[in-house]
Image 1 (spheres, rainbow, N blue to C red):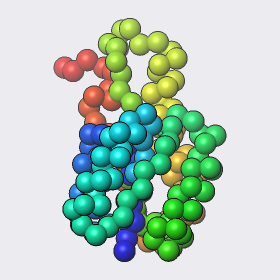
Image 2: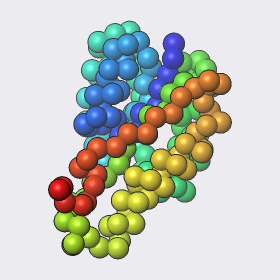
Image 3: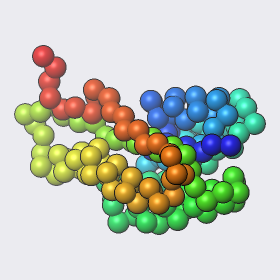
Image 4: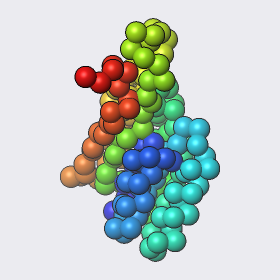
Length: 152
């Protein structure tokens, strides 16, 4: 069985992606930052639709210092749940949007967005590539609501 790691899998596009992967028979390790309830709902939906397993792990993409421990959690779950030590797909979907208009953006919130939406996925991929199956794939996604610039 193939296994995917999906960041931001507790809501929105990440949750839908994780559920669809499960529907296709792919095991899922999804991450959540604060929405444990949403992550648990996704796990239940994945596991009841098909005979696949899914796991939810907490991850803050803005905290690069936690990525080594996160990779160890992934490795442990791969061994315990799927009896393997690699995964096949990394879907970097987790991110944060701007709750304020461009003109009101603070430097602190800008740094949080940059760390979560760009720096985090880059260094998470760097950390996780050693656990990726030879020939595995990585995909980075984003949505328009992550932008703080007004449309037009």
